[in-house]
Image 1 (cartoon, rainbow, N blue to C red):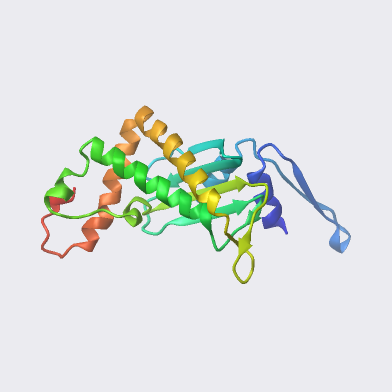
Image 2 (image 1 turned 45 degrees about the horizontal axis):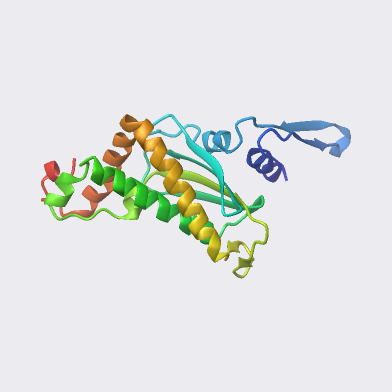
Length: 212
């Protein structure tokens, strides 16, 4: 219960939730309130981890009546950690909002890298970078609000609204694109870091100068 109350406080910026436990004749209170919303959620999840960049990328907005709130941060691991929510419901199986986020992220980062000639060495070596490479070490929270969510899956924790995919993808592409143009140095580091995955995929005799 405590975990869920903390989660709801993170998802609803500025909301105060007080959990009172009066079991065993004693009173214990936990108060959850996060002015930074899911930005603080990301920091909580990545606490103690080796971060590629201490900053958290966050943006919120509305596309085609879908309210999108996203925060993301890279840490020096190899796996991605995605947390998705629809109307405060934890969609542990993901769904169309997660697909839209991944598509928007990959398309935007790849375009930025190509436009700024950050992948020239990979192209010369005929090494193609994939969406998985851009998500390496990424922790992200995707929280959306939609009027009529359609849930799928055995536990009804997978979003099925097709229109949400495009809305989230457009929101991510626009907001992340603007962020990259305004913050070129951090983005260069992220794109450079993503190449580490590609290097690991190549044979051991692949010259490192083609990758880094």
